[in-house]
Length: 188
Image 1 (spheres, rainbow, N blue to C red):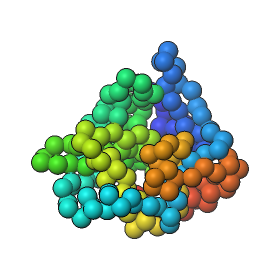
Image 2 (cartoon, rainbow, N blue to C red; image 1 turned 180 degrees about the horizontal axis):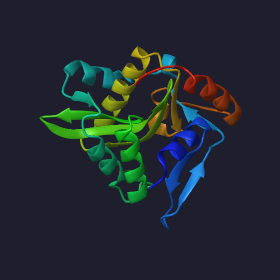
Image 3 (cartoon, helix red, strand yellow; image 1 turned 90 degrees about the horizontal axis):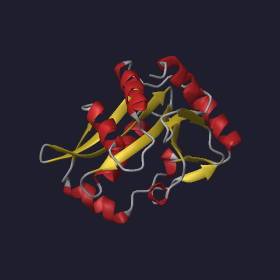
């Protein structure tokens, strides 16, 4: 297991761990770095309609272990047993969080990440029902906005995140935003 303080210090410095195919853990600090600007977050039109229908229920920190296990349950994953144990420990200490989407009493999708000060570091998301992870992301952004968070780090930019307004910024710019965000006294 990665020591919790080492993990938190890594995030404060702009690095995060990933498991490699051989089981080793490597640390990354991409340049450019992807973020979702909280003020410019875009909810696609079709998703807005789905939100209005209230098909899904969302919860926060209801079943962290199930969420991280579901995120790891894919053919190509960087989430191994050591990562699961490390982030579960961070969750027990109040630093790692999950946002879950439910339908008919079943876990349909979700995401997890780490909160330090006014920064949230999104780690992974999954869905079992179409759009369930997107609903979790919208819920996360609303939650972060309500608590005046300054930074939503998504590590790398994907087409999935681009549709919500995800952008890439230089590592130097990211580190400036990060420094201010982690020093902000915020509670997830």
